[in-house]
Amino acid sequence: MKRQETERKTTLDVRRKSSWFTELSPVRVGTSASAAKICLVIAAAYNRVLECGVCEDVFSLQGDKVPRLLLCGHTVCHDCLTRLPLHGRAIRCPFDRQVTDLGDSGVWGLKKNFALLELLERLQNGHIGQYGAAEEAIGISGESIIRCDEDEAHVASVYCTVCATHLCSECSQVTHSTKTLAKHRRVPLADKPHEKTMCSQHQVHAIEFVCLEEGCQTSPLMCCVCKEYGKHQGHKHSVLEPEANQIRASILDMAHCIRTFTEEISDYSRKLVGIVQHIEGGEQIVEDGIAMAHTEHVPGTAENARSCVRAYFSDLHETLCRQEEMALSVVDAHVREKLIWLRQQQEDMTILLSQVSTACLHCEKTLQQDDCRVVLAKQEITRLLETLQKQQQQFTEVADHIQLDASIPVTFTKDNRVHIGPKMEIRVVTLGLDGAGKTTILFKLKQDEFMQPIPTIGFNVETVEYKNLKFTIWDVGGKHKLRPLWKHYYLNTQAVVFVVDSSHRDRVSEAHSELAKLLTEKELRDALLLIFANKQDVAGALSVEEITELLSLHKLCCGRSWYIQGCDARSGMGLYEGLDWLSRQLVAAGVLDVA
Image (tube, rainbow, N blue to C red; front, side):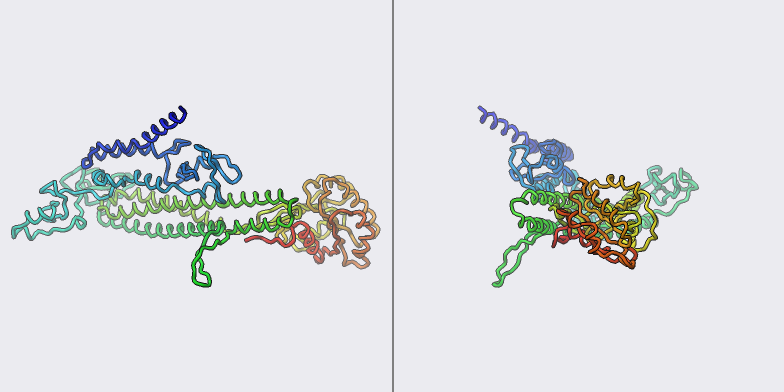
């Protein structure tokens, strides 16, 4: 029973989907009524058949309603596919629950249903092969059929400029067979001269002038009677033909700008395609030593990034499998977001290019019209030009501010976390006794200039970029009353820089006491410790070895990553060596940006 019910539903669905073909059969093509009926039937079929089975919205040639194919063969619109829940790197068909794997581009990577798109385009444009005669009756093809004035059963092919009649070749020979009529000039319909448009107010007079007043721009055409005695009496005016020629010239200028704009869009679209290809990679044909051609896979930057991730984690074996999967998911998400953005840019450029092409076609059609229609199209052309100029300005702003780069910079931390981006941010807290030179070191690193020692009240915070790291350094005041506030800066700190004044031997014990308290803080348990032995240029200053001994660093810092570096905040000596040590500790060795 279930099988019979399923077959019955399937049969009804097929009949409903295909019923629009049978509706066309009784229609006779060749009359305007038949053509209109065809249009109504096609429109009904278009709304009934070419719709997404999920949202029931009609498919479109572009945008969110583009039909895309799933592996099972079902077609769903792009918008509905983006709303389906992800199962890893796959989605399930909403109709039969079969799985379709997604690539790096996500839903954008699924193939479009080009057969459905072709049918959709034909329905929209009216180009259905078996009803070609209906196109002529409706006028979809763009060229209206002119009947012979002598015999309406014939199609006219020439125009007699003397008789002002449309004739077919046969009737032209018959009606102009006498010696007198044979002298009449007959030209092809394509070369037929434009007929003068008669004034709607004074139908015996032709349009000869154009009114230039602001209030008359909706109806600027006028004859000599309108100019002298009618509603345009006393208005500023110009002759029709020069005004039309001027508008044609402006249209030609606009067409030149449009062509340039089109080239810019096309170039930008090509760059987008190139970036996507660089990211995704692909297949290319190469020849081996015996001139045999075969395909070879060319890896993209996305695959290179994944390879870098896999190479790093392959040496860590089973204990790092979970971290490897997490890192791959980060790269996949980054690649997916980047490719989706690029695909969206491609789609936007395609739509923009289509709009510009439509504007070009409209301008070309306007140029072929008679003077009156050219003048009447002036406002529309002006609005079109303003719209295109705004779009071109927006395009230029977007293109200038966005850098098209296929590189995917990947950096690994010591704790096996992956960072994607040109700079990895590190939070550093600089601590020490007052007068040790913390602020001087900070501004030397930031601005490469010496700052006179001034006691810090509160804190300073600056960003210092070094290699592929961006250090956010918090410089906290070292006065005795400010030291209880240090603990408020420990959260999420990845490194502590402790500055010791090498020239004050009597304060080393006080520095040892504060450092010991510092290292007992739970929030700083995993933080790196860099000790700057500052003021090494002062005569009689303690050496690095002496400070290490006095501070009992080997005992105090047991089980912790630490390093002591002698430095001079005035000249900058030793400062960048300390940053080098931090870089080596924070970033995994041998890992560079992946391009």
